Image 1: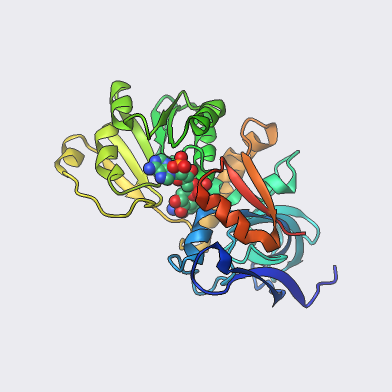
Image 2: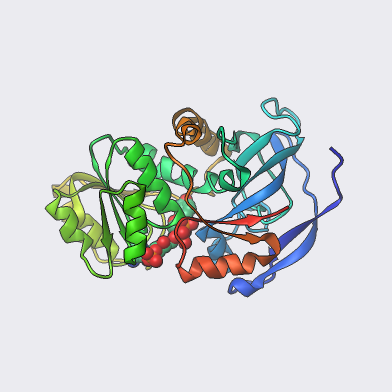
Length: 329
Ligand SMILES: NC(=O)c1ccc[n+]([C@@H]2O[C@H](COP(=O)([O-])OP(=O)(O)OC[C@H]3O[C@@H](n4cnc5c(N)ncnc54)[C@H](OP(=O)(O)O)[C@@H]3O)[C@@H](O)[C@H]2O)c1
């Protein structure tokens, strides 16, 4: 495959709103040892991209400053020491950054095969949410079959993934969302009960059920003490974002007396090895569910790469259900 010198991309011209996402021309990156270069067909859009655009989520020093944490396409070049992939292989991959572009480099161990029967448009939307949900819900949160699982933001990219995976692994799933339509989407995906947080108190609903064994939360703020109240004895709260802010007043005696665990993580700053281990576990335990169709990404909308600003406007307007994708070529 002959590679061009330059590629179309979208950069963050300065910190700000969606309008700062600007089409540009950049040099095609080169894969280093242990890395692959992917010619992307599609790139997934995620909330952390909007945080980075606003100047609140700096990329790690070694990562591309271009936004974009996931994508799918064909391997265009392999770096020294890479044996798993060959030029032309179809992959979807977690990216350290740089997904809003025709070509992106990533660690070879952070790429996964496209699940059987899945189109690249859908495969592009798997890595960021599946790595995040699997590592936080099952590895960190230890969700078991039969447990009561509550996910906030049930209609988000993260939420639609969490509902399906928790259900597939035999948990009882509860979700919050901000409208009747979004709640209906949550129950269609496998939640036994969706809670419209504008009309109902999730604490009361969960306490009536005996409490949540695990809560995956992206809201924070006053949800932190409310989540603690909603947990069952020995329950776990896993925090993956703070859309309503990171500070709260909490009576920690409840944590002690009811043996609760409060934890959380962010994916991007973790080591290459940690991400490779998540990829390995996903391929073994989750990719068969994607190949069989038991679990599938929920697609909201598609925008051309050079209209990434419109994709961000849609995401931040919160009208979407599931994933937004950019068509790169
Ligand atoms: N820690 C990590 O490694 C990691 C990785 C990826 C993403 N994240 C975070 O996970 C979150 C979801 O990401 P995404 O890409 O899936 O974004 P997204 O699709 O834009 O989802 C954001 C969701 O938050 C919901 N929301 C806001 N306030 C809420 C509230 N008070 N109660 C319930 N839901 C509320 C919105 O739904 P409503 O309209 O229904 O309110 C929306 O569905 C983001 O905050 C992102 O930064 C963290």
